[in-house]
Length: 120
Image (tube, rainbow, N blue to C red; front, side, top):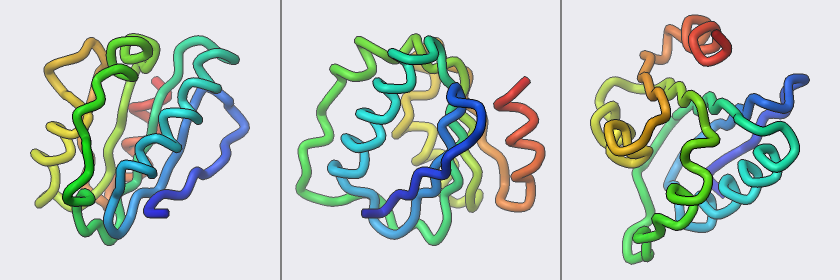
């Protein structure tokens, strides 16, 4: 798997590290986690640390908007932390501008700033 969930004391924060090639199975696993947290805590926030990223899996059916339609408004903020070269692709992938969720990108050296922003 190209993701690792980092557990936090605050159940309303989903902190995840994404690396290598992110596949549909990774997305589905994160969606299951998000649904569980939303059902338990209500609205959630996501901090995604994108590290050694190689892109998205090719040849997979990424055309799943069901989660976004059903749960998208229950994610208050998404902070993306990674290499500036993937900023636009990351925004497209999480649907910045197509959802009510606040989404911001932070360079790798700004992890602490991203954590403060996503929790504010």
